Image 1: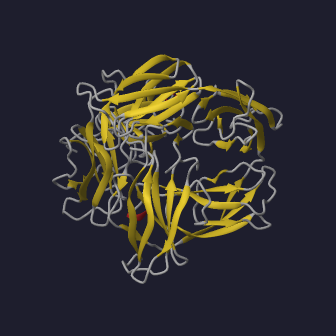
Image 2: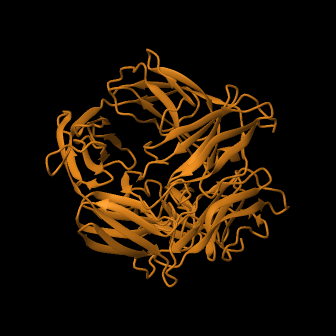
Image 3: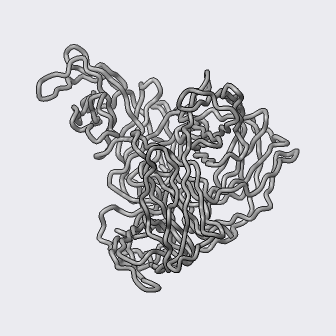
Length: 587
């Protein structure tokens, strides 16, 4: 049975209403890029409980036989009803000295009868790790933390691999020069973590090119210590103490109080991202007791000492999540809350129920997202939030989704040229035409890439509504940009999507002062009223203010902005931007 304390990003929740259950065993096979079985491959079954690493573990290791087959004895044991990567899941990882690692995600209710893994040619990368003064760090561990890209031309690398722990897969130890070369790396987007005693473990290498030396650094850590005690003054052993930085989502440090109620946690940052004294939210979780969230600050690089958490008898909040109009329970729905114990998070069980143990006092609770496989329209009429005064042994409440739930579908189709030949290895961008909430996503459809035969699969697309699709060939000579209507539950496009010849822009771009002459701009196609988040193309105007770029779709409106307008910056709208059809329809 997995831990009953569930954690998501930097949030803790007591989810005693959610029970784990066995869901079978994993079997599979491993082949090379030519489809031939590979014998002697080390295969790891990794339980991914949280993105922070808490509760994660290697469940089992095995090897492939002469036919490339493997079978784990460990029964899959999930803690949460929801079945996506934002809750707990498993990863099957294959490693062989002659190939790059390969992986496949296994989620509740999505288990494959057989897991198929394909091994490809490996890449390698040399890393150099130093402290903040440039001194090489010997004996540090560096490992592959994240890998994968939804738009990768290689279908094997389109799932996101997350390994918060150093489990001795694609990893190595630095020498006296702070260097190490790691092989068996997949040729896809990859990021690497580093750790060394006395330093703060972190994502030290955020991007790699598989060329030259990648440079990273670690910061000196600071520690914190204290005691957890009851109102009687007696110590409280076995309580989990949780330090969450105020400026980072997903990085946490945690420990347990000992028999005397004492605790010590390491790996804390001395400074925040702006160089100020680091501030942390300190939380406590226990099966019977709760404590108020504290805000502590590290000053002058001095370790925190005598942090005191006063535990009290907690109040159990029990709730239900229902669909409006039908009052049907929503198993797997996500609920969030804010109490004196801090920010909380839970997922409804198979009866649509959830529970929290919190400090008595004012509290707010809200519906956050529906179960996996469905979506709700944002801004509906459901009673999605409630404020209550938590008192006594138990409090009950009911939350509603904002609208009825509608199905998501993994949409398949094909891209072709006007002559019917397939369009291989190009990104396909999808955008919703209205706001919606789904499990782990808000009004977002991940991009994908076409396979060699032009086929594609878009993950978790809202159906019973319209979506926008955009694709262009690598030379930008052909493109498609249009809004299409999907029937409820539709998972396949009946006809191939045909990319048509593109045209060059014939329009002068102006602001309120006149033509924008020799101006660097960026453009994004608009479908409906939205543009793809992962598409950004650089263009430039000429001496007459005319965009000098081809590869544009006639009749399609584009979002045009100053190249210096960073959309992640709130002030981007202060710079030049407009929406305009760059090539008139019919040209």
